[in-house]
Length: 67
Image 1 (cartoon, rainbow, N blue to C red):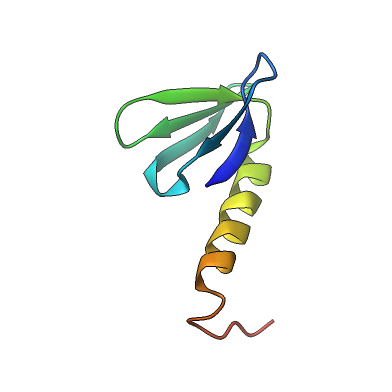
Image 2: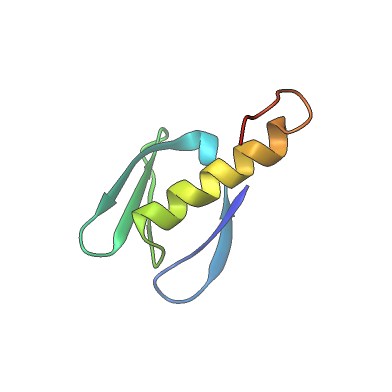
């Protein structure tokens, strides 16, 4: 799960595997594969960075990353 912030300041956790699109409108809109969407304060790049970090944590013991 990645932690994000609703526009009203409420934090929440989101399963990044459900993300279909991320759009800046100028706030960030995350559309899920379920059709639901969230408006968040984080930028698209911040969300992408969180997803990368999340996936690295999950797979860190199963694959070797060349960094």
